[in-house]
Length: 116
Image (cartoon, rainbow, N blue to C red; front, side, top):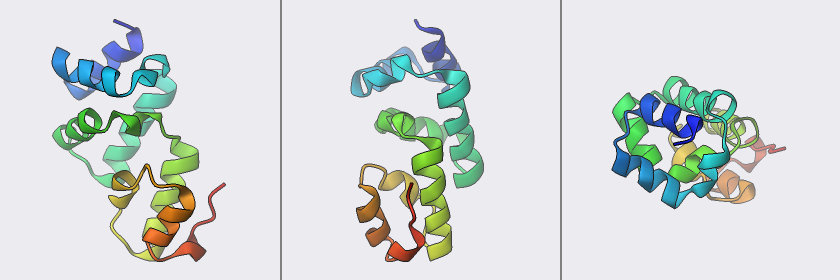
């Protein structure tokens, strides 16, 4: 098992089947660094979105593509836009696959969205 996957498994308390689901659904996770990529995202999800360990684990197992999006170019700007628009922060995760312009329209605040 790759060191980054072992760290992910330990951090989220994933069993072998859950880890397998993450890798099968999002193989790119194999190439991501835990220390510089995955770990900071997990920390962000918990600190900024108030996800419990269990909720975070469930989100990652059900949507492992969450780990592939950029923290600086996707998650942080979208969270800022949600907060400025006064909408639920969890839209950052539930609409992560929506392109930026569609995301901004979906929160009814395209003027808050200046995605780079």
